[in-house]
Image 1 (cartoon, rainbow, N blue to C red):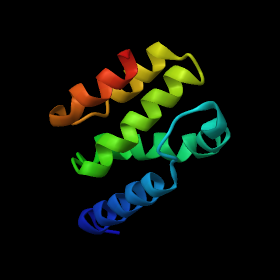
Image 2 (image 1 turned 30 degrees about the vertical axis):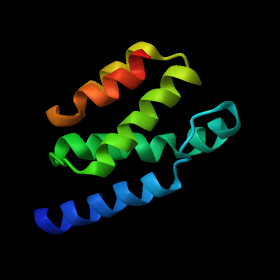
Image 3 (image 1 turned 120 degrees about the horizontal axis):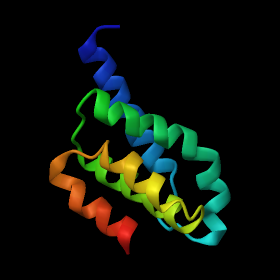
Length: 100
């Protein structure tokens, strides 16, 4: 698969994971987040590897950060994982979610 085709499929995957992730990150949603976390973290890696900067990226990273912070109490990993993956234009939005 060439790089352009790979990027298209990665963007579609990010969109799909975004659709599946619940809007709220509350206790009732944690089981779904736990199930989807490996997929979401893979998407976060692809965001860095392929320099993807789309609106879906902000929501996905925000939801991961909030889940890791609230459900797992993993503040440091949440910040480290996400800040290494966040394109600069949306970095502040996600960091606000982690620090809130």
